[in-house]
Image 1 (cartoon, rainbow, N blue to C red):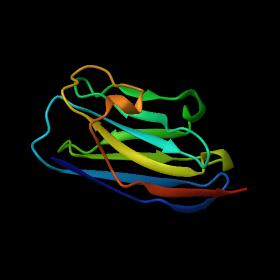
Image 2: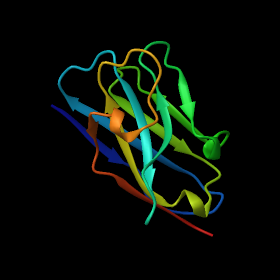
Image 3: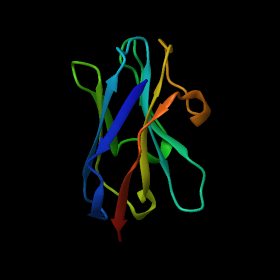
Image 4: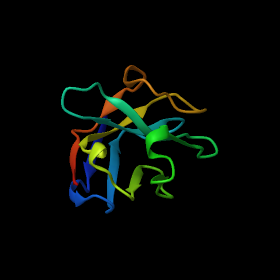
Length: 126
């Protein structure tokens, strides 16, 4: 079992910043990918950003490139999402997720992930 706990959501003005954190605990994690997804009201859950196990390669959906930065703590079990230049369309519940047994790359489909956090609300006022 893996537990994921997100924090750092809240209310920001357009153009502002927020930093999300996701701490993983439970079983020892190796060879896994971690990612952030988001879900706005009435919309499907979508991939935002991910980080791979090997080489720590970073992946972003086009709409957040240049504004969001994903990173991982040196210990490996905490992932961050620094969100700058926030826009109203970034408003959503943000979830972190773990894809076990994935050494290379990251998946972009929610079905590829094994464990999810409870989500944290991000609201951007325009």
